[in-house]
Image: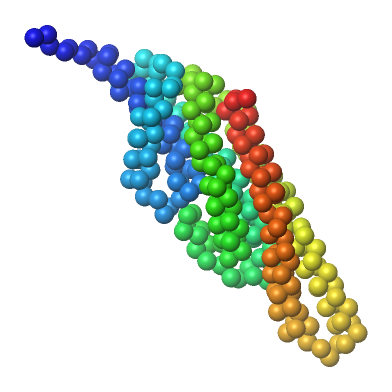
Length: 261
């Protein structure tokens, strides 16, 4: 019988065929919404990345011949992890637009003190931010945002091949500029409630001038809170179109960063 003999180079190529894609996939799962939350254990993320790598590896271009025990391999590992984390971070930015809007609304309505621990990030945020985050996360899953992210990840191997330098420098500046996008779009979402609460405060200010004996703080705070919640309830009808526009802009920015048309 003929014995199957594998050379060291062939073994390195076989391992690299699955190792290099798994690094980028693992970086995405580490930072993206839902899967990258702290409620999902690292063991689950590793298992998901392993099975997804087995599925997508035959669809990817040929892997480069890189010695796994070399400085070049360490550089490629850092590049692949950085690409995956950057893509997941871009998706996190899309959902944190609504977290920022919830923080602005909560501070304006006087609910800034009503904070709770966010199980997905471990950071204390307001209750309204948690509400908007849960709603946007459910819409993200219902629109198959996680599947769209995986599709872009697979296509990124064509525009950003393994071992060719990773993300360009301009991509990091584009990611940093998304901070202004979070604040501006969050303000646009919270602006209707801002305007309604401001009108209520102006009305109570006029009442305080006409009837100084009335305690405006005792009456105004619950009225502002109730009216703000009522306006927020009415504004939920426009939440879906705003989420669609935000998600489209976020994925357009993600495509631009990884060079996918």
